[in-house]
Amino acid sequence: MQITSLDLPTSVENLDARQAELPEDMEIEEVTTGLKCWRNSLNNFFVMRLHRTADPKKRSQDYINMVKSKIDLATFLREYELHWEALEGKPVYSDEFSREYHVARSALGWSPRLAVARGWDFGLYPACVFAQLHPFSRLLVLREMVGIDIDTERFIDEVARLSGQWFPGATYYEFVDPTGRNRAGTDGRSYTRLLTAKPLQAKRITLGLNAPVARRSSVIDFLKANVKGQPTLLIDPSCEYIVKGFGGGYMFKYLKGTLSPKPDKNIYSHIHDALQYLCSKIRGASLSLDQESHKTIVEPRFGNRIPPPNGLPQKQISGGLAYGR
Image (cartoon, rainbow, N blue to C red):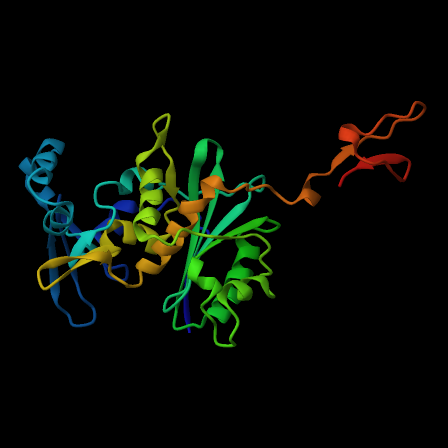
């Protein structure tokens, strides 16, 4: 059993190194700008990575814009940026996503004053994405979980456990694959029933849109919008599968030279389906916190009786008055 779930990072990510997809367990020498070398410890091969920036004429933004105007983004990423995730097809969000703009340079904190939304997809690679909707419809994607070789029931158990670690005391809203109310887990219960059972005990479940084009459009709406120049969709750098999916892992694959009309089903597609279910309905949802966490405490007064605010009933407690539902 494997579960990909990334804990809170404690330092700023080296985004350039991650984008270059350099090996993490080998000593890398930067000979000059655009040229890196290392020796593969497994087979003793000497490797040289030659990037376009080794040529001073190919470093400018004008050059990049000129090349991108002549070829599609997937080809540019593969041939000029050595971005191998875009090798076999066309990225679903090739024209809307920018790693520099949509991925935070350091860890995003969560706000206890806002509800945590969880987007769910079930199947071969069960997936869950955690996000919060801030004022002005800014969506911060905070965490991700992708299940590998694990059944849905055990995956849900892990989501419940890590939710308590990452967002203690939070109020949760679920946005799920709409087919989850009909599809069954190993014990015969529907996936939505599994969410409501222990240990997760989900109380607020919303079915996401089922139409693939409408779901993708809801994500594009977040990607294209901005609030005073700031991205409306901002992703924590720890969300590796979401970021790599945006970068090309989530793609329309070529089949016999023809681009498929549907995204390829791979390890990146499930977490992106989960994100789509969330994005498709979160703007229309009422993400209020639990009423119990919002009781109004009034300091005790002696002498004249003070009427309770908003018509709430009075309760006498230890010489003071507490008002709450």
